[in-house]
Image (cartoon, helix red, strand yellow):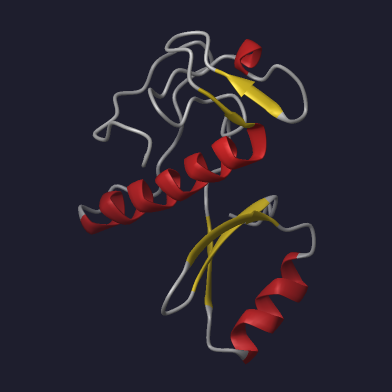
Length: 121
């Protein structure tokens, strides 16, 4: 995946999800510090509920507010999207273990099944 809009940076102590506009710069800096850069499927992360998995454009109220039309979960939109990026990363690890490749999000308006529940997801 060459497109670089979102990356997950992992070091020994942290799993960080963030928007990174300059991929080459981040790769260079990460390599210099011995940190691995992993590209993650970022499709629908701003429209998907990090609690129940429901995807809809109308979940995103405005630039900074996310409210799920399915379950009513409310959170800062960037924090919600970053939780989804972390989940996509973890799902891609599981899929690589069984040899099926990186994860792909469900179509808009669909609900993805979620193995987790509660505010920690």
